[in-house]
Length: 226
Image (cartoon, rainbow, N blue to C red; front, side):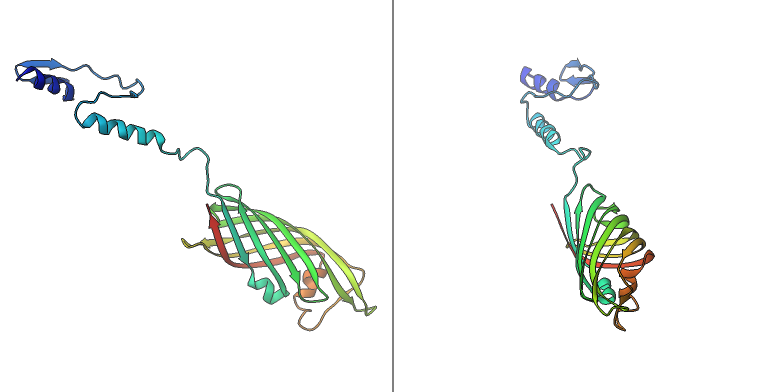
């Protein structure tokens, strides 16, 4: 074996003991505790490929750097529309991978009209999906007729609410959520609230009750993530 091939044999050999022609070469034991080299010698193709792999690994993003996808969802609640005659929408914005803010403004079509709002925080088991637990504050102002005076008066309410449920998020961004809960509220009115036969079962108690009321949620909407 000539000097050129003996040199290449010694450079490419990975074993502790190498037989390069008539010569027996002892390779030094690498120090694995030392940091990886930042450059390699250009011998054959193998060192070049190894250097490229090292650079790609260094450029890869760290999965533990705390970054998370930003999500925004717009949802409608048909239950409130059909039972309480309230038109509204819920806006959700993620604060972290599993935490989201939600804001729900709505307008009361029943009685003599009203405006309501709810602002809260939800904890999901995944990004805008999975099992959730939510807490929120709510408030509203509405107009209503009085049974005693036959006139229109203003009423207000405020309270706290808690919900648990499950939300599905499809790969295409479709959101479907189901939840139950309870709210404790205080209603302030000047007189007893009067309503029609359709408004008496659910609408009137929802605005005139001071105490605890059950909640049922069904949301359908769309989510955008980046």
